[in-house]
Length: 489
Image 1 (cartoon, helix red, strand yellow):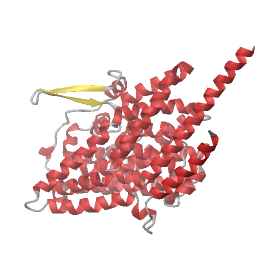
Image 2 (cartoon, rainbow, N blue to C red):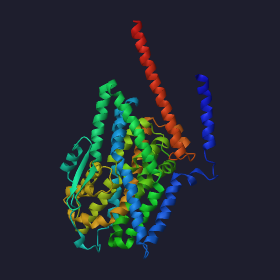
Image 3 (tube, helix red, strand yellow):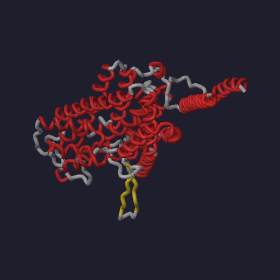
Image 4 (cartoon, rainbow, N blue to C red):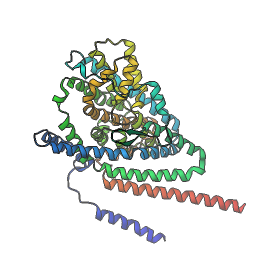
């Protein structure tokens, strides 16, 4: 049997070489997934401006439908993805030395980057003063229907049911809409993962099934992610067609302040964090681009999570056992854009609009709420709950939230791009500091290898399957040897 198996391996290699497409002569960055996303951005901008012309309302409607469908496809896989990824990651942490220290370091770096991000938001708001002397109509102010509170935040952590789903009945449409709470699913998954580890060998079949199911979910998600260039074009086109600068009116200064704060995080705080930990800034920026671009157009950290995890593993050199823990956790709780920059700028805007002078204590409260309450955003689009939590803590009028709702779709793109970039950065920093980063994999990614190409996905899947089979055979051999030893005794 060994001879045929030996000859079969080269045959499979030749078949793969024959099936591989011929190279176009262009560099990898010009033909890869990132280039396709950029092309989608450009096409979307063009289509968006065309849709703003008279007689092209149908184009805006079509792009809205396509964009919403793409986001829905990403979201529908989030509950099973979070559950399987977290349970598997908790089990895999057994294979990593100093797992508890890695988990604590992850939370510490989450807090450090959140702290400096909220300072960037405060600086941007105080320098630009977007709420002072504005011509916004006060009649547009309105309190939101859903507000955040510390008690509500704590209660939201406790799962309502075992699958973290809630239903809402619409009496007008006579329909029931199901929604999921990512934070609750995360808590359930952590509890089940820890319980499975404590159960020992009895839980091994469950853990193998969960890992196998995770591979199935990820495969479906990769199919969806391959549609990202189309989704990008539709989402950007919809934004341009629906939200122009003239629609923002006097809120343009607020949007500018938000993006200045986000730029400070991207181009000052994150690079300094990388340099402080010995990570090349240009190398990190080049590798994280697929994550950043997809986060910008999708507006969902959870939807981008599979890309974030894969790029962090295959381009940043972060071990799979640790990345499968830190990235899902970050996608649910690490929100430098939504929970740090945005609430800081928005709270100061509301105070300036109503002529309220903030005290030093209130500025400290902005920092505290942003660092501690990040999980309130729970990985979904929008950060209104986080803003209401900040305003209520500061004692500012909640009606100020209504002033800013028109800008939500535009600023949420930048916020999410910063969120997912920070999630990958923290995982890379912790791995680097712990000495577990795969430097060879980092160096290999510098050659322009696109980890999101179908050929790479297939090769990695085959390699992981081979490693899993070898591990299973080793386990069977050990059990057989133990059985023989017992019989001999």
